[in-house]
Amino acid sequence: MNSILVQDDTDSFRDLFTAYYPFVVRQIMRIVKEQQTAEDIAQDVFLSFYHTDRTAIENIPAWLSRASIYAAYNHLRSEKRRQNRQEKDAADKEMVIPSSEDTWLEKEAIEGVREVLAKLDERERTLLVMKYSGFPYAELAKATGTEVGSVGTLLSRAKSKFRKLYDSLRGEEG
Image 1: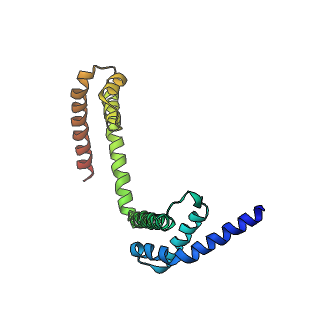
Image 2 (image 1 turned 90 degrees about the vertical axis):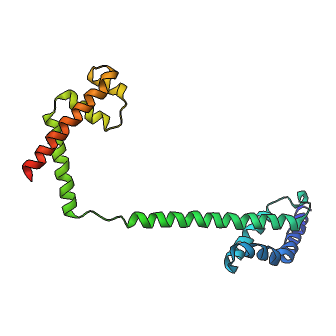
Image 3 (image 1 turned 135 degrees about the vertical axis):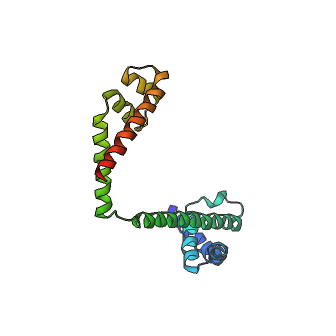
Protein backbone atom coordinates (compact mmCIF):
# COMPACT_ATOMS: atom_id res chain seq x y z
CA MET A 1 0.00 0.00 0.00
CA ASN A 2 2.90 2.35 0.76
CA SER A 3 4.34 1.84 -2.76
CA ILE A 4 0.97 2.82 -4.25
CA LEU A 5 1.04 6.07 -2.27
CA VAL A 6 4.57 6.80 -3.51
CA GLN A 7 3.49 6.04 -7.09
CA ASP A 8 0.49 8.40 -6.78
CA ASP A 9 2.75 11.08 -5.32
CA THR A 10 5.24 10.68 -8.19
CA ASP A 11 2.47 10.77 -10.81
CA SER A 12 1.03 13.88 -9.17
CA PHE A 13 4.43 15.58 -9.18
CA ARG A 14 4.99 14.61 -12.84
CA ASP A 15 1.63 16.13 -13.77
CA LEU A 16 2.42 19.34 -11.85
CA PHE A 17 5.87 19.52 -13.42
CA THR A 18 4.46 19.11 -16.92
CA ALA A 19 1.74 21.68 -16.29
CA TYR A 20 3.85 24.37 -14.59
CA TYR A 21 7.36 23.99 -16.01
CA PRO A 22 6.84 26.48 -18.90
CA PHE A 23 5.28 28.96 -16.46
CA VAL A 24 8.25 28.68 -14.06
CA VAL A 25 10.79 29.08 -16.87
CA ARG A 26 8.98 32.22 -18.12
CA GLN A 27 8.98 33.69 -14.60
CA ILE A 28 12.73 33.13 -14.32
CA MET A 29 13.44 34.35 -17.87
CA ARG A 30 11.99 37.75 -16.97
CA ILE A 31 14.82 38.13 -14.47
CA VAL A 32 17.86 36.26 -15.82
CA LYS A 33 17.26 36.73 -19.59
CA GLU A 34 19.06 33.49 -20.55
CA GLN A 35 17.04 30.43 -21.59
CA GLN A 36 19.55 27.79 -20.47
CA THR A 37 20.11 29.47 -17.12
CA ALA A 38 16.35 29.83 -16.62
CA GLU A 39 15.86 26.13 -17.32
CA ASP A 40 18.62 25.19 -14.87
CA ILE A 41 17.08 27.36 -12.16
CA ALA A 42 13.63 25.93 -12.94
CA GLN A 43 15.03 22.44 -12.36
CA ASP A 44 16.25 23.58 -8.94
CA VAL A 45 12.85 25.11 -8.15
CA PHE A 46 11.09 21.86 -9.03
CA LEU A 47 13.60 19.84 -7.03
CA SER A 48 12.78 22.01 -4.02
CA PHE A 49 9.08 21.66 -4.82
CA TYR A 50 9.43 17.86 -4.96
CA HIS A 51 10.95 17.80 -1.46
CA THR A 52 8.27 20.13 -0.04
CA ASP A 53 5.11 18.86 1.60
CA ARG A 54 2.66 19.84 -1.13
CA THR A 55 -0.33 19.32 1.16
CA ALA A 56 0.85 22.40 3.13
CA ILE A 57 0.85 24.57 -0.02
CA GLU A 58 -2.44 26.39 -0.47
CA ASN A 59 -1.77 27.80 -3.94
CA ILE A 60 0.75 25.81 -6.00
CA PRO A 61 1.13 28.35 -8.86
CA ALA A 62 1.77 31.15 -6.35
CA TRP A 63 4.31 29.01 -4.47
CA LEU A 64 6.10 28.13 -7.72
CA SER A 65 6.05 31.76 -8.84
CA ARG A 66 7.52 33.01 -5.57
CA ALA A 67 10.11 30.21 -5.45
CA SER A 68 11.07 30.98 -9.08
CA ILE A 69 11.55 34.67 -8.41
CA TYR A 70 13.60 34.02 -5.26
CA ALA A 71 15.75 31.45 -7.07
CA ALA A 72 16.34 33.82 -10.00
CA TYR A 73 17.38 36.70 -7.76
CA ASN A 74 19.58 34.37 -5.69
CA HIS A 75 21.24 33.29 -8.93
CA LEU A 76 21.87 36.92 -9.94
CA ARG A 77 23.36 37.72 -6.52
CA SER A 78 25.53 34.63 -6.70
CA GLU A 79 26.72 35.54 -10.19
CA LYS A 80 27.52 39.08 -9.07
CA ARG A 81 29.58 37.78 -6.14
CA ARG A 82 31.38 35.33 -8.46
CA GLN A 83 32.11 38.13 -10.95
CA ASN A 84 33.42 40.40 -8.18
CA ARG A 85 35.70 37.60 -6.94
CA GLN A 86 37.01 37.04 -10.48
CA GLU A 87 37.64 40.76 -10.98
CA LYS A 88 39.46 40.94 -7.65
CA ASP A 89 41.55 37.89 -8.55
CA ALA A 90 42.37 39.40 -11.95
CA ALA A 91 43.36 42.69 -10.32
CA ASP A 92 45.56 40.82 -7.83
CA LYS A 93 47.28 38.98 -10.70
CA GLU A 94 47.91 42.26 -12.51
CA MET A 95 50.00 43.53 -9.63
CA VAL A 96 53.37 44.39 -11.07
CA ILE A 97 56.31 42.37 -9.88
CA PRO A 98 58.97 44.85 -8.77
CA SER A 99 62.05 45.05 -10.93
CA SER A 100 65.39 43.92 -9.54
CA GLU A 101 66.36 47.61 -9.37
CA ASP A 102 63.30 48.42 -7.24
CA THR A 103 64.03 45.44 -5.01
CA TRP A 104 67.64 46.57 -4.62
CA LEU A 105 66.60 50.15 -3.80
CA GLU A 106 64.13 48.92 -1.19
CA LYS A 107 66.80 46.70 0.35
CA GLU A 108 69.21 49.68 0.44
CA ALA A 109 66.56 51.83 2.17
CA ILE A 110 65.95 49.11 4.76
CA GLU A 111 69.69 48.81 5.39
CA GLY A 112 69.91 52.60 5.77
CA VAL A 113 67.10 52.62 8.34
CA ARG A 114 68.76 49.80 10.28
CA GLU A 115 72.10 51.62 10.22
CA VAL A 116 70.52 54.82 11.56
CA LEU A 117 68.55 52.92 14.22
CA ALA A 118 71.82 51.35 15.39
CA LYS A 119 73.27 54.85 15.91
CA LEU A 120 70.37 55.89 18.18
CA ASP A 121 70.42 55.15 21.88
CA GLU A 122 68.32 52.25 23.09
CA ARG A 123 65.41 54.35 24.42
CA GLU A 124 65.08 56.31 21.15
CA ARG A 125 65.28 53.13 19.10
CA THR A 126 62.66 51.41 21.27
CA LEU A 127 60.30 54.39 21.09
CA LEU A 128 60.51 54.62 17.28
CA VAL A 129 60.23 50.91 16.59
CA MET A 130 57.33 50.41 18.98
CA LYS A 131 55.48 53.54 17.80
CA TYR A 132 55.69 52.52 14.14
CA SER A 133 54.68 48.97 15.08
CA GLY A 134 51.38 50.39 16.36
CA PHE A 135 51.89 50.39 20.12
CA PRO A 136 50.05 53.06 22.17
CA TYR A 137 51.89 55.65 24.25
CA ALA A 138 51.13 53.75 27.48
CA GLU A 139 53.03 50.73 26.17
CA LEU A 140 55.91 52.93 25.01
CA ALA A 141 56.13 54.51 28.46
CA LYS A 142 56.11 51.11 30.13
CA ALA A 143 58.81 49.71 27.83
CA THR A 144 61.12 52.69 28.26
CA GLY A 145 60.46 53.32 31.96
CA THR A 146 59.18 56.87 31.39
CA GLU A 147 55.98 58.74 32.18
CA VAL A 148 53.18 58.59 29.59
CA GLY A 149 53.18 62.41 29.46
CA SER A 150 56.85 62.42 28.41
CA VAL A 151 56.48 59.92 25.58
CA GLY A 152 55.32 62.48 23.00
CA THR A 153 58.29 64.78 23.62
CA LEU A 154 60.80 61.92 23.67
CA LEU A 155 59.28 60.47 20.51
CA SER A 156 59.44 63.82 18.74
CA ARG A 157 63.12 64.23 19.66
CA ALA A 158 63.87 60.67 18.53
CA LYS A 159 62.16 61.33 15.17
CA SER A 160 64.16 64.52 14.65
CA LYS A 161 67.44 62.81 15.51
CA PHE A 162 66.58 59.88 13.23
CA ARG A 163 65.72 62.23 10.36
CA LYS A 164 69.00 64.16 10.72
CA LEU A 165 71.07 60.97 10.84
CA TYR A 166 69.21 59.44 7.92
CA ASP A 167 69.56 62.59 5.79
CA SER A 168 73.29 62.78 6.54
CA LEU A 169 73.66 59.09 5.65
CA ARG A 170 71.93 59.62 2.33
CA GLY A 171 73.98 62.75 1.74
CA GLU A 172 77.22 60.79 2.28
CA GLU A 173 76.16 58.17 -0.28
CA GLY A 174 74.82 60.67 -2.86
